[in-house]
Length: 389
Image (cartoon, rainbow, N blue to C red):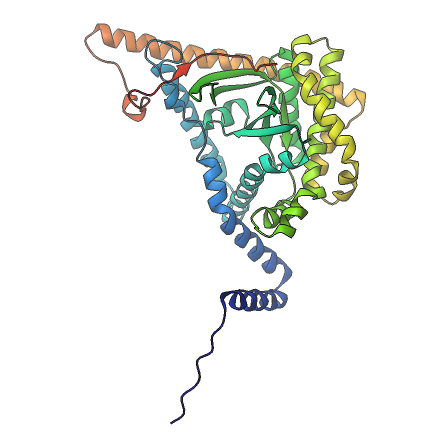
């Protein structure tokens, strides 16, 4: 009886065969189904990297320090506000059909993927003497201050240069315009962007827990197709893919978005004599507008990217349109001030109720169990700072 001779197949041959089979199957699929499969596969393969990025997000509970800085009641209040916002978002989302909800959730995953890639994409475009560090804010700052990411730029030797607050988008033109109106609201107030819960290392390597104000803001985004194209290169270990990512016109389009927005904001702040905003915008404007000139070809390469064009259309407008956006920004700032005042009044009422409860022999705490203080013995500094020059 003849026995078949075992065939030894290397792992690389198996991988190549699997890829070839997958390609043949995809060729037989309806284009829409094939694109859906590609989207699912890339999101699945990059999920660990995205989750690792999101795990770095600030936790407001770490900012509690008895007797100084942010008190427990204030932090608990912010956490409650965050939960209320999340609940409201879910209620609104539930009004859409199942297919629309699936699409919205997928768009959010694509936006999260671009956010996770962003630090490396920008680092690739910077000059050799500059580095960028990413900080993921809390959900409170995401919902309340519209900041998805804070980028700290440093010169060689570690000296801090400037910061940018980034808001990601995949929304409609009108919703994106509202984000830009928010940027102009920051210029009108002179405060630019705010991050309430920010964590950084001091010169001794210890955590500092601070708040930031006067941080320049930008809104960034790319189409789903272009984000996925970048992600295929980003997740790869192949030298040729790393080189392609470094030279990608799609990645450089993000520099164009930043450069144009900062240029428009700097011009507006100068014209309106908002000197505080001008001083904070000057360094990032100088750096990114010069880079933007170098990457002019990227704009031509992304004419089919609807999100890129939506952002550029909201940025590069005639003087009358920009003047209207600034006026809308002033109105938006008034709304924000009213909302902040209402929030502070709710907080004061809560503190007063807690004091009455304490005087009556009760602790008065209703949500303390939901808030965990910093680890005993941890060296934590709580302070309030403006964004450094």
